[in-house]
Length: 72
Image (cartoon, rainbow, N blue to C red; front, side, top):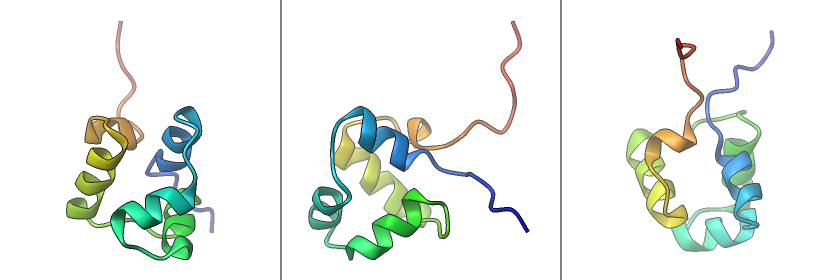
């Protein structure tokens, strides 16, 4: 069964040149937890996703893959 790519946390971390370790420390989470989020093995709760967005100074929607394709 293929894993669904739901969040973009890994992409946003890379864009900002921020490490999993930095985010883990900022959120008081284990680095393994952050790694699981980045690989979409597990997903953060909505509340935690908001905390991630705040830590990265992005809109929470920037951390999610769209569910619909934009129409021109």
